[in-house]
Length: 605
Image 1 (cartoon, rainbow, N blue to C red):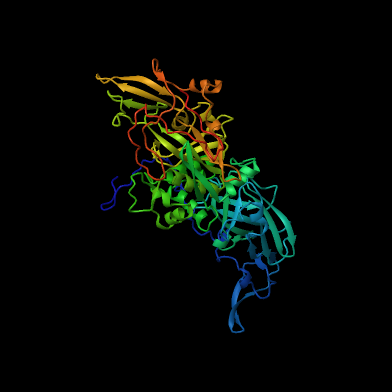
Image 2: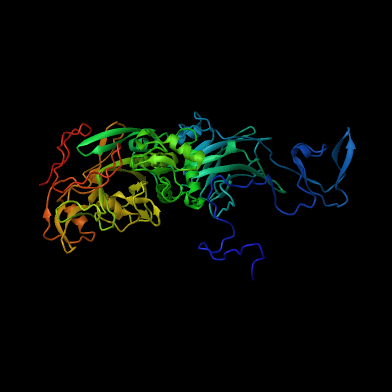
């Protein structure tokens, strides 16, 4: 059957299959929940509310049942206004129900919730809590609460088309025996006030929930009106052992979650410089901007409780290469239409500009991507740190080597050489369990927002287990081979003969991944974490690692020490390709590193 004229025919093919409602992928979208939800048909309209009670009945009572059909509510006139009059009815049953006067979210920075949940630094008046940990609210009713007679719910709703099965609608009974993955209990009752303790599930959706308090009456459910001041932000919880981002090191947890400032290392392995960076994850508007990033990515709400999926999504959304992300990269040196990457000193302005304009912010290079990505992760509660890899390879063809092609004269053939080496490159590490991998591959995971190569169709990288990279387990997701090559690939020089064949003539096994640094815990100095990524050359573990991946034989190649190789330098002063250098060009002289108080590794000639 064809569509009517003037109306295009809808496609009946969908990769999603059958679904009763659209996929909820926005934290802000959501319809108002009705204030009254009847249990059945109401032929005479909704029941009388508090202000509509008959004057002959005590406050808080409504008509529940009347067996005599002729004795019904009638309308009369008195005192110059309309009122309800109840005729005599011997079978009339009066039912008293609760009425909600006030809901106190206990959301002040000095109150119990934000202190216990380590969210008192966020510049917002709304309640911010972490999943898997109890928080409290205080409800004031019109009379004392009677547990045996009164029943009420605390409801949490996120997104459009909320469903219990999707975790987007949580009707929480304040009864420990009836609680599910979310738990509720009455902590204290005093006069008309009831303090309720609520524990979100340790794997629940991360985002902004709308909260309602609902009273169960004989007619149906009466709930509070929608009030944005009662919205609750629920974040990942690295303090909870039940959460996948749990980090059992207090000093490192404080550094990678609560510290708003940091330093990023750049330069050469023999001459390291420091760039301060303001992450500002607690600044006003930053949390909403981070949630908006997930909305712009149309990430389904049901996936937002999975730290692995959130980190992978964000690694794509931090760059605007193919998905209207946060930052626009530029390595040309021409920054006329934006801000030079070297001018940025923090993440707050970038994220707020993106949230207000919905356009990518110009311009960024690797350390800017890493700095903003770090803010995103810490803001949502995922432990994160910025890492700098000195002499970082870019394996263009996925063979886990850095291939340098020389022409007939021994000079680098820039047209045929596709792989490159950056003098340094910045990425992020985030801490989480990897339930999708075998045991032992959790902990620190590499994620990289700089657009270098596509992964599953988008410019993104990770998360990849650092433990897997060190041990050569490059078969595990995500993008482990590319990251392995960045820190541990051999540099192989090929001589191009006159007949067009390539012959390996030289291999350098120690140039790439010379040093991997991050900020030390509680200090403004460097922490060398190279040993977490690779074994020392010649060690048994290093040999075993090399045997785990396919290596093309370079029999007859001459093994040499360090050299300076062509590629794109990630220097903050420029992002242009370095000059053409031959493999025989000597390395610049080394000198003691004031950050590490030791000399960098010597050439292994």
